Length: 281
Ligand SMILES: Cc1cc2nc3c(=O)[nH]c(=O)nc-3n(C[C@H](O)[C@H](O)[C@H](O)COP(=O)(O)O)c2cc1C
Image (cartoon, rainbow, N blue to C red; front, side, top):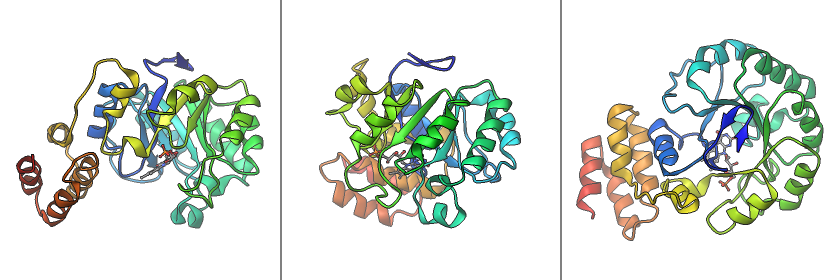
């Protein structure tokens, strides 16, 4: 089981998620058994410092070939794989012509992929949505990438409505590239999806619940919780906003989630958040 030369322990990945997939969270998902963990999307021209100690799949978000080569060279040593985002449906992406709104610009897509391919020997994936141009993009991608991820919802659908599994099947039937399926993957459907697709990605179901990967892989049950995330945060510091976000996310499977979230919302420091969490169980 591999993508390019990258050997993988599991065919189930953590999907790219901005504001969710910080380094401590990715580490927990990997320890729980995720075969590959993606970062959220990153604009190569952004000055933000990246934390990449876990050898993630680093996702590039741009509509400009400028800076892509330098970005890859800068981070290559710490990254297991590079991904190109052609799926983001957000208002910002629409305004900038990034992500899902780049689907019309086939020449530009090819230019960026060409730069990626000529800069790194690391595997490359491309993640895209259902769109009229998806098959044209697939043909271009075949020249440059090692696998392709499909989230079969349109940009108008965003993250709601049913993913179009038949579209993803058709997509898979049109290529010899390994196909990574994304869209509502969970413990109930991953097995049957893996009969049809080479890999699957778990997105929202993993938020606040990295243990989903150990429940899926069955390789050693993990019982990670927010305090495990906080322990890693000591080593890989996160902004206060992120500390609070993750605390909120991790309330997901708790019985007293509503009450806990109310108290967390009022917390002003990391220590307060820790106290609220510890005193709630
Ligand atoms: C909070 C959030 C952030 C996301 N950020 C990204 C991103 O940065 N790049 C990307 O390609 N997809 C992003 N996605 C889409 C997911 O990777 C995934 O394709 C989508 O959520 C469908 O899978 P799911 O039903 O398992 O969540 C994001 C989704 C969510 C919910």
